[in-house]
Length: 90
Image (tube, rainbow, N blue to C red):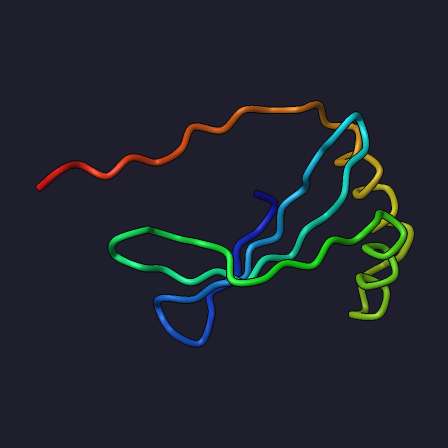
């Protein structure tokens, strides 16, 4: 997960992640909702290429050269395994 942005209420958020498959990285923006029974789950998602990500950052006023360097560096990150959070039984 690269970033999480709080939604309009405590049970919603936007999550920005990088997905790597076969050595190719794509950025994914996910709209998530929280349920007490399930936890956080994705309602929808948008995949973006590195070029689309750079263009989006530029459109939002980010320094394009900095965005390109940061994006390239993150795209070179290897695959990682993340632990799934567990909920203690009550």
